[in-house]
Length: 334
Image (cartoon, rainbow, N blue to C red; front, side, top):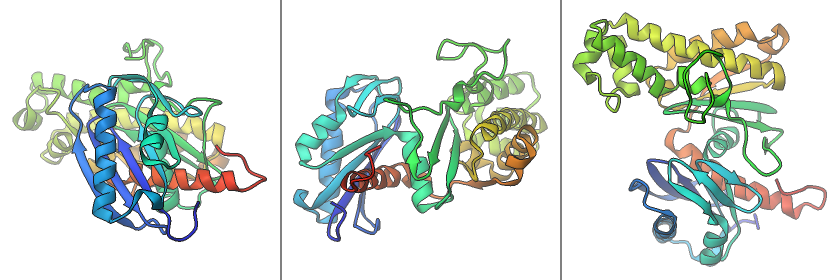
């Protein structure tokens, strides 16, 4: 399935956007299509849009269905990896959706489904910031905090489900209520939404005049770029809020370093892109302080390089790798 002449589709089924990319056998991008999602449009409509976008991407790349090696799809939410189903996705509003079965039947080729964070990290492992690392941990602070791990070329996973939910590591026993129903998860202290809520309070109290002028106290407007602009304009309290959040993230990463001994840690997402030095330096300092000295000395911290392409690239590369493993008699499909 991986011989020269086969083509691959990577699909990023994000909570706010969808993107399809077509690749040749060397993973050079031939075409891409991007759309905004339309809220909770339902699985039936959503699957139709996926099919339409893949078809448009094939047309733009001048690829016939018969030349498709496979389609990889990165999805948010809880996924049954063996059956290729989205069990539940709060971002999409989908439940028990047989994505692999539907897309495979439509296009007549193998389809692999994986968590979108895993897809993005696998893309960085294959083509970006962590090429050929033996063990790479990825942490992506955004609206929530996504995490993933690639170990010896495989996505680290549970028996059926994706894992590495770093955003739900408890960091405060007396902390805030998380959307998962537990108390004090990392997301409640260090996600972009948590930072925005604290920043809005500071702006309301008159402690962040620049943020007030840029975005007011509207959480929907206090995004990563607004936080960065406020800090550059001199809002010291906003910098302190961001550094506190980054320290929480770094401490959680340091604990994972003690468990996994990774040789690379990839940091990405909107907050990292908007405030690269502040976020990366603070996270790295806190992580190295928390980790055992041996593990701290052997790891490098890097920023993600692939940007918005990471999930689609990783999903396409993952289905190719899955089929390669399946064709080797001594190896098992992940």
